[in-house]
Amino acid sequence: MQWFVAPDYWLSRLVFQRALAVVYLVAFLGAALQFRALIGERGMLPVPRFLARVAFRDAPSVFHLRYSDRLFAAWAWAGCAVSVALIAGLDQRLPLWGAMVLWLMPWAMYLSIVNVGQTWYAFGWESLLLEVGFLAVFLGNDEVAPPVVVLFLLRWVLFRVEFGAGLIKMRGDSCWRKLTCLDYHHETQPMPGPLSWFFHHLPKPFHRAEVAANHFTQLVVPVLLFTPQPIATAAASLMAFTQLWLVLSGNFSWLNWTTIVLALSAIEFPTTPPHVAGPPLWYEIVVLAVAAGLVALSYRPARNLISRRQVMNRSFDPLHLVNTYGAFGSVSRVRHEVVVEGTADPVPREDSEWKEYEFKGKPGDPRHWPRQYAPYHLRLDWLMWFAALSPAYAASWFTGLVERLLENDRDTLRLLRRCPFPADAPPRYVRARLYRYRYTTWHELRETGACWHRTYVREFLPPMRLEWVDQSR
Image 1 (cartoon, one colour):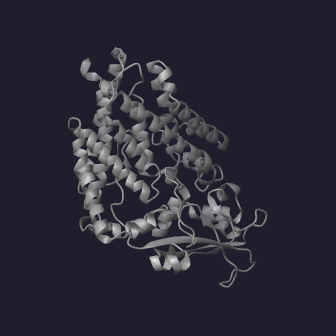
Image 2: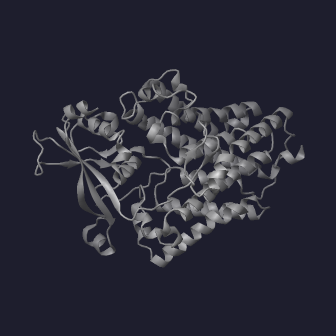
Image 3: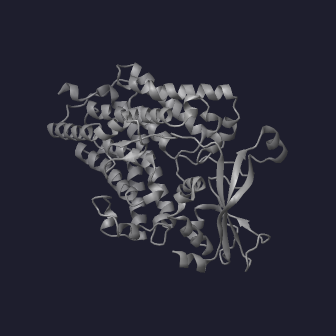
């Protein structure tokens, strides 16, 4: 079937596959380095406790068979190894079926991690990586030209990512319709980057233009993905440029980078495709059958797009095959941060020497300038942002965090930038306080060197000692 393949997209496929493998590597690396404190046997939300109450059919994972921290670590590092093999192009040196199996491995391995990750993995970019990763299995290698239907399904994912985000904004916060959301967003976003302070201080008319351009890119341009070339290439390129702008403005894990990877699959690079044999019949049957199944599963995400009660970042099946996406349907006007402190005093008093724990990514010390971490994802830092929005977001894990700080737990302290207590002398008490943060002005920055100004709001958690935490659990 001549219509089945698109030889002109062979380089698009190659660039897409290598870039996706890099995203996989980042995801597995984050899992390997952070899991013990978050979901390990002694973590804040232990996997064994989760598996005891969740059935395999609801959260398919290899860890239903057996879990140990050593097994999880080996699984995550093996995922890193497979990702490196894909970056190096091992799939191109295998027969077609072998390449498909190789691409299936990181998808199945990361699915096993996401499905036991609980709150720490409840983000849209997890499902996005799994959905895109599953489609990559059927893109083939140098033995065949890229299948048209898989390229179409990749554009369908990109359409839902962008169009869904655009609709949730128009239906959500009124500031998107008034073009004023960027007056607040750069200051109140979950984890600012090193340039976010400067983005915030851009002139307000420029912010209005940014929001208007965002609406155009997310609500008009996605439709052009399904038009003939070179219009589709121009649309995908504009999306990629917009995502790069977002990369500069903050830390959003690998959400922006995966969207850019998707856009690359829609760009037709001006090169002469190599001559390849026609695809084998079994491959055509498998690809068409999978495509038909994914189209059927698209019904609920498509219905969600046109629903007045649109939800964002929702998976409709436990394999995360077809999902719904969206971001920042509402924008906070004020930034609050939870500041965690400890003291070695035997009796906690207001005038005790309270020492602050410094996190890697979330704002803390007003003089500490934000750093660029994305596409690497600092999971604890992101959840701390949600905790500041409402204590309910932290109800399941914050007590566990406090307990581990009172123990000077090594794995937990590795998630932080600085622990103010020696390894052999943990704090006697830990407390948490809520502060309001705002960016300093240009004048304040020159005067103090601080990019943040903070004001005490209220107590978030009273002083706790280890015995009290144990009794409350």
